[in-house]
Image (cartoon, rainbow, N blue to C red):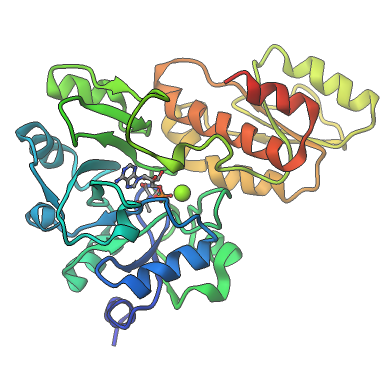
Amino acid sequence: MNDIQRAVELLRAGELVAFPTETVYGLGADARNPAAVAKIFAAKGRPADHPLIVHIPDATHLDRWARDISPAARALAEKFWPGPLTLILKRQPAVLDAITGGQDTVGLRIPNHPVALELLKAFDGGIAAPSANRFGRISPTTAQHVRDDLGDAVAMILDGGPCAVGIESTIVDMSGPRTTVLRPGMLSAYEIGHFLGRMPAEATGASPVRTPGTLEAHYAPETPLLVMPNDSLPIVLRDALVKQERVAVLATFPAPFAHPLIEWQVAPADPAGFAHDLYANLRLLDSLGCVRIFVEKPVGQPWQAIADRLQRAAAGSSVKSAHPANQKEETRQ
Ligand code: TXA
Ligand code: MG
């Protein structure tokens, strides 16, 4: 039996299988099996009312999960699937409440990764999968990250190498008359707007749709993280050195000078490269026992999704550390 067959058998038996997608690794369970879905929440330590994305093998499965699908939603699916796009649509009545968080909508996606697609085709059904990290932690972009976070809590981890995109899918709500981006991703609102011929709205706090993944305190390292404009970096570094503090920096340019108290990680200067490496870089810098992680503030539209994740990482790490500088960062939002 090969790995895919074994994974399918485990899913059919109600077990959890972690698998690679092009965005991040997912923690998969049979989306029709309530006991299996409950295991996801237990393994992640995730609040029970947070809805899950159902991954499907192809667009013919859309109508099994969703109803009242608009032509625009079908067109988006056709254009961008398989790919880093999740559509929020009206649910079919049979979809489990544990999947939808008790809402009248369901999130659906066809991931663009050969292993995920092979698994979904062999399973021939919906696989519910959040990111395969513990709740509130940094999403995994390698099989080793999943092992580090979840270890024995999962029956099997399919290793598909590092994720190509590196941050979670763009979530677009098409369950009502308005098209709204609930979570930005590397598939930008502009690409979606260009294709549809009208710009999607951006989510506001007033949105009736709950998207717990957009909680402030998410995607967070343990080490307090601060996002800094690059011309502020020399100032905060000088300050850290005066205090003899060991700090980490993630920036798109090399360190202007080397110092034993400064751990400097150079990130790719293009958004796709930066996103690809982002979570691995944050995990690495988080493991070094520094007092703080400073990240160069990304500027401009192509960096929007990255800026979003960094802002949440800053807010999440401040909840964990209650560092005064980080609290300021959080209340700013
Ligand atoms: O790229 C991704 O989307 C990855 C891979 C594994 O596909 N999955 C992922 O899942 O990021 P998760 O659970 O970490 O984040 C999914 C987000 C959550 O914020 C959840 O609240 C939102 O999708 N979501 C799911 N179903 C929803 C629904 N019916 N209405 C509103 N938000 C929903
Ligand atoms: Mg997640």
